[in-house]
Picture 1 (cartoon, rainbow, N blue to C red):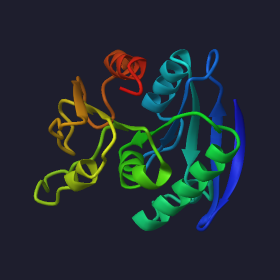
Picture 2 (cartoon, one colour):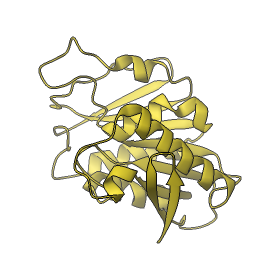
Picture 3 (cartoon, one colour):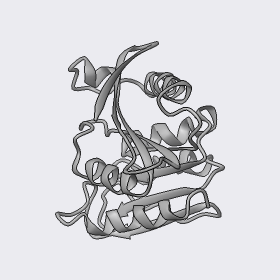
Length: 201
């Protein structure tokens, strides 16, 4: 694993790079949640599964997190910083590899909003926050619906942030747990491994 610092329009971001376990056939870039970091259990577990499936993985730390700030930046800043990191990685470290963009919670929203601009071939969402707890009328489903490449959403079956429906290009896998999933991440790992095995299907 190596770490790369990337200057963005909103400060310095950091990409933690993990090589594929063999010849890389794709790249997976993952962003973290608003209140967590790239060390989140599910991000670590999915990184291992992706590497085993032949993907180079970049875990992307947003500038606010690198700077030690606890409050997430506004959406437009998150999106701009993410795109700056992805552009750098696709030009050098991940050059020539088809890209799966993704993340958990807030990071999944960023990946959906920027999928087209990033040139993503697919999007992986871990615990997509469909709405704030108790506020189903404030839906963010439009962010998911706007993605026009294959999407996998892995969602806890008791997630207070809601459960998105499947769509024409969207597979939704419900696993035991809440927004941070359960103690056993096995179902998350299986869902991601199965989906990556069929990439770019």
